[in-house]
Length: 260
Image 1: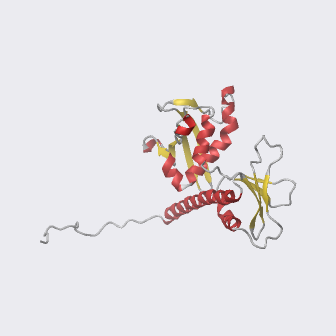
Image 2 (image 1 turned 90 degrees about the vertical axis):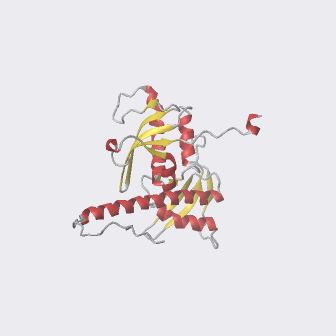
Image 3 (image 1 turned 60 degrees about the horizontal axis):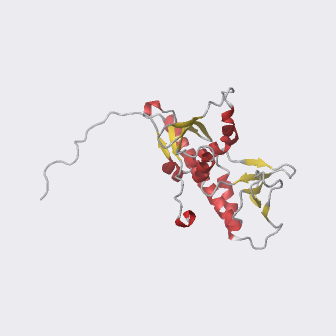
């Protein structure tokens, strides 16, 4: 039986509110930049996955940038691994491949999207013709690699407390504390301008670049951002993306075969 009660509120004239077109334009640019960084972060991981189907130990790719194209030339093991005085070459592209393997075609197509990302670990190769670069690849699991690096010094670490300021083409990260399982600080990170930091901060100076790059990558990747970041505090206390807890993955449980 029809209900005679109205289900919509009465309509009437609403006050005209003029929008600021410049503000709307700036908001659209910010959303576009954020989406672009998300694409770059996912393409970066996919590029690494394709390269490792050919060489599982690949940690860096050598590529050439010309005005017309981007082209992958070689795969390297970790060029900064001090165990190997000379970087280990895993694969080099032949001068002319009659039939390029599928992984290489996919990797070549992904490279332009990857290079739209911010703060990538790209260095120019000295002693080579201009345009040759080396790009370090992300770990197969960035969050797990970050947790492993921190737990070498702080085995009980469960999270990082940090501040994020995200703008087009820039993700500024300030790590404040390494947090333990009870939510208290295991270690406070000094302000980068605190030149009187005690010797205990040596590990941070050695690891800061790795940690900050991992945090930037995880934030830019839409799936990782939703998975590992938790906003902290009241909104009035936050600046931009604000105070965040980056929750480190738990240590995997030992299997029966490992225990025995």
